[in-house]
Length: 81
Image (cartoon, rainbow, N blue to C red; front, side):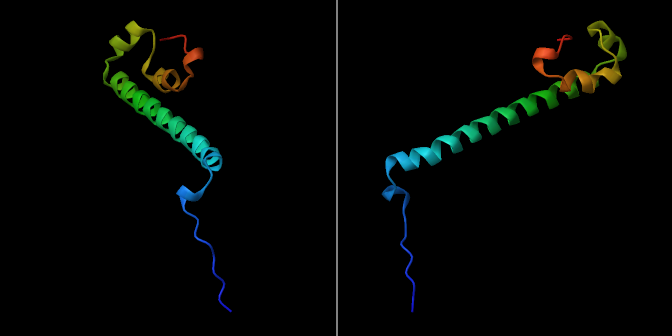
């Protein structure tokens, strides 16, 4: 006996079902893109701070050992920016 499975194409799904799948997926993709953009910005900023001299860092009110903490602090808790 051969079982035949129906082939379901995206076009055959009701619009509501497609929206239930697509909307959360797009929201996750947006969050991932925002996270990636923020990660790239922090990486660039961290590299820029690492290139600065100790005097320049001192002018900003931070030391070399403070760089990771300053860059990893959430924006709303980051008093040094």
